[in-house]
Image (tube, rainbow, N blue to C red):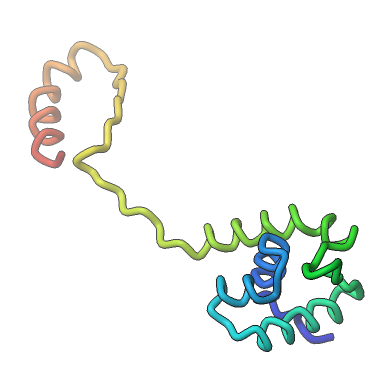
Length: 121
């Protein structure tokens, strides 16, 4: 079995949000015919018409409504995975550490340890 085209998830999410092939095509910067072909592929993949003509517009089928929230979540999760990680800004990082030691340790190593921490920070 071939792997599904995961780009169709974005297409379905936009089609359901826009409720129009033409508007979805504009939003995804595709031609209306390319969006119609993508809708045909979605229909074939799901075995459901997903969007049906009602007057001059399209309305989602019960299956499309059922898929809508899940598809939206999947698209958002995928976008989050592909987003670059934020760089750690050490100048803004605030941490507290508690060292539990004997008095002798503090007297012997405390000043040098604090100086080294201040230098590294």
